Length: 293
Ligand code: NDP
Image 1 (tube, rainbow, N blue to C red):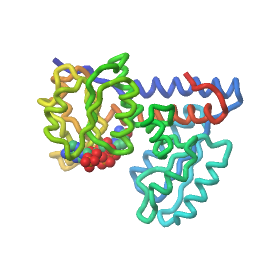
Image 2: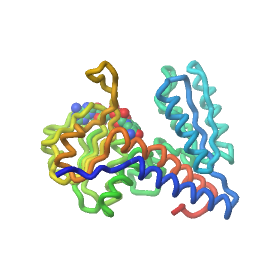
Image 3: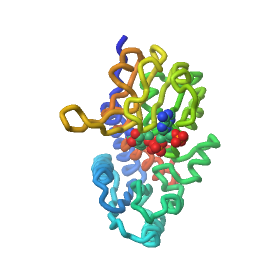
Image 4: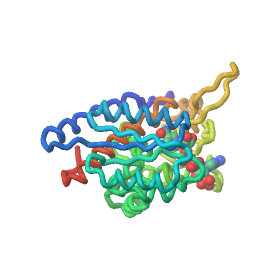
């Protein structure tokens, strides 16, 4: 058996097109232009690439994009003052502070300063708490993308056994909450879990968010399972170059899984598309409009 490849590129492009249509509608019918402010502190090359991609895609969806670049040695007070300004700015509906922050800045304090209504990264404790309580919330973009990808395979996730490997606040924990909201039965595993292979072998839906190259092997996977690989790991090749791989041993797992996301071209594509979804949702909620389609 060879798994169906879940093409994140195509699914993300469809989602971005849907967002663009909705943006056009709220502009036309309500005079509302959703706006996203991205704050980049320092000049980490990977973060710069992400921020550039967010800017381009935000503009392509017809939204306003505001970029704020601050030097790596900016003080915490200066950063908090910028966030306070963006919180008060009626043209800004989403605020994202690109992580990781340089040393000397306290991520928790910075994230907690963002108005929860504009917290499009879904990391503020207000949104994390609401999500955990099964209430409407802005949820983190990568787990949202994982759910959308899974639903291209199964229209409903109800009753499926799911395993989430990894329990970070950014991916694993919110993904568990989203799966519960979908009525899946969820196991959450982490570095202290015993017999991960046996736990994984029970799952119809496998989500790997660990940061360990090709850790999930073929014999961990129940035949026909849907495998969503969140991991992004850069490893050296025999030719002295580097390449990106996920947390799943793709080639061997694809021989037994029913469906699988590639790396690159899977979950990563969905993260920015879901950021646009969250910005549109935040803009509509702030303006008192119904949740967009
Ligand atoms: P973190 O490092 O914050 O969390 C990793 C999690 O994996 C932890 O919960 C850790 O357990 C668990 N873990 C580590 N080693 C093992 C092991 N041997 N067995 C089982 N569990 C283990 O990572 P993130 O959640 O931020 O990211 C995970 C991966 O996803 C990374 O590769 C990252 O690059 C990628 N990523 C991709 C995104 C995308 O857009 N595609 C977005 C965000 C992340 P414990 O809690 O016990 O330490």
